[in-house]
Length: 168
View 1 (cartoon, helix red, strand yellow):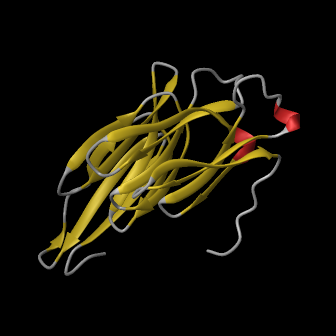
View 2: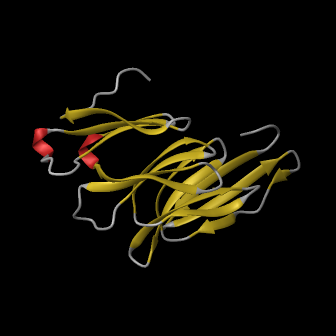
């Protein structure tokens, strides 16, 4: 809820609905989209994944701004705030490497490719990930990168076999 207005979302049979309650009463139920497979809500804004022709696409919806398409071929996403999400995409369901990007409320920006799915940790707007580079074999260790919105992706170490997040 925000101010004297509250927004409620529900999914029934793959259709995402929205209801708004204001000081004047309950608004009409609105259909946001169909074929929704998963969603999460952050402070009145909903991020949802929808099946589009057999592929998962990520969208953002809020009552004031409507629906925004973010990215296709979605593997997963981490909602950080109403205007920020970390997005993992893949080109096929067999791959354990992903493309990672961010959505700042207005546009999706690709951060890096060939990210190792088993070496990815997200903490708020920041995240750490590993990727094999050159002739590196995954079990021999990978390069580790740290990402912040201010600095972008910065390589911080080689031969990393595991990332552990400590704290919030």
